[in-house]
Every structure is written in C-alpha cells, then in structure tokens.
Image (cartoon, rainbow, N blue to C red; front, side, top):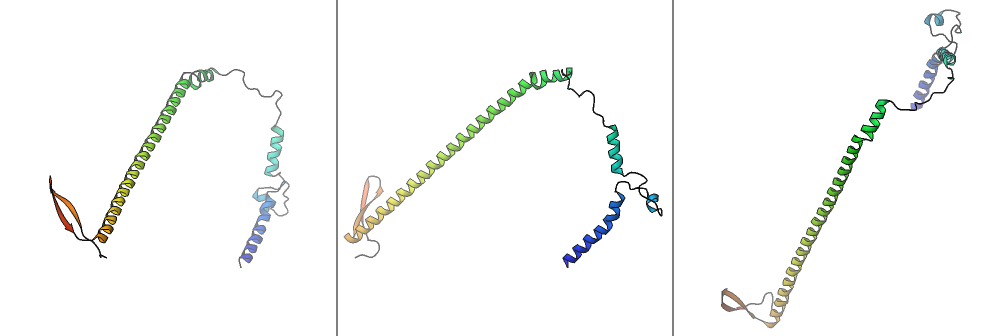
Length: 179
C-alpha cells in the first residue's frame, strides 16, 4: 500500500514539475499574456538566467593594474598598535593575565595540599579505628581463653576493688556448661 502511494506521489510531482521547468527554460517568457496567447512562441525574450549571464559577461572587466595593499598603516591603526594592542595597555593586560595564572596555580597547589591533608587525617582515623577494633578483639579473645580455662579448673576467684586501698575476693561461677 505504501509503495502504491509513493509511486502515485512521484508521478504527480513529475506531472506538475514539467510545466514549471519548461517555463524556466532559456528563451521562455515569464509574462502571463505571452504564455497564454494562442500560437505564441516562448522565444520572444531570453530567460532570467541567460540575462544574468549576459549582464555579467558585459560588465566584468579585468583591471589594468592589480589591487595593492597600502604600504603604511593609517594614523589610527598605528596608534592602536603602539598603545592599545602591544603597547601600554597590552603590557598591563599581559601582567594581569600572568598574575591571574600565578594566583590560579597557588590556589591549585593549596587545594591539592588540603586534599592530601584530609586524606592523611582520614587514614589516621581509620588506622586508629582498626587498632581500637583489634584491641577489642584481643580483649574478647582473652576473655574467651579465661572462660575456657576456668571451665576446666572449676571455680575461680576474682578480685574486685570496692574502695580505694581495699580489695575483696569473691568466688565466681563458671559460665556455660561445666565438664
């Protein structure tokens, strides 16, 4: 179905394009009365493109002397070159740009140092946390070893401090099932 519609559209476009192309052909007249008059020929006036080509051919002349750029610049151009572009203002702009570049480099170095400092602090905090975790794990393992030895030995006594300088001894019961 789509192919049929596409073919019909192409055929219609060719049917409508043929008269338009014939009107634009060289030697065709674009005036309505010449095109509609019975028996009129369309060679009465040249086409628009032919007329443009003829006009260009008649008017185009090669200059006898080729164009040359001036050997010296105008006073304004010399002033601008000496004072604005490369002179006083140019030097001031270059100095401002170099100062901005130095400031940017300093800011970048400061930012890198600050980031390295934060990373070092974070690494130290992580190491401290790991060491704290290791000490907790070691204390837990020591408690486990103590509990295992107390199971096999029966009851043990622990000393607790109630007041400074005085100690009390109390029997403790083994934890878990005894053997």
